Image (cartoon, rainbow, N blue to C red):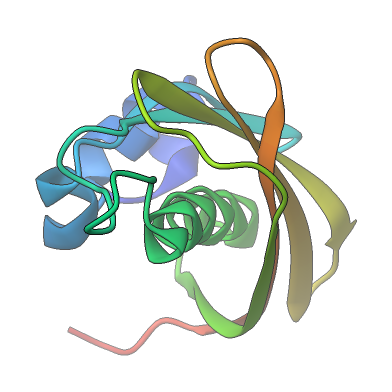
Length: 143
């Protein structure tokens, strides 16, 4: 299986073939749109809550990091690997039911560093969390 975005004309196909990793799959993340300039993913609230029934703050971060890191890797291209070096999140509302949607857009796309902002909203379109992730781009290790 190729993980190179150049091998696919469709970023969504590339992301689906590459996979999101065990944690993202366990949490029910789904990519619905995937390109260098915009990535969209969803995650169910159910199964990802705190004991009091609110979507766990860490779940917002998992959605944000999954979108931002995958977007950085798509930008990095063949033979290169993007790895997270900084992430922060501000939670402004609590989702308790349904699905949340993360929209990831680049703030900076450089040769060695990327910065993405991920806005996560509930089903009513209300912002619940804003995540910012910085990824460093390196040469991929030889396999």
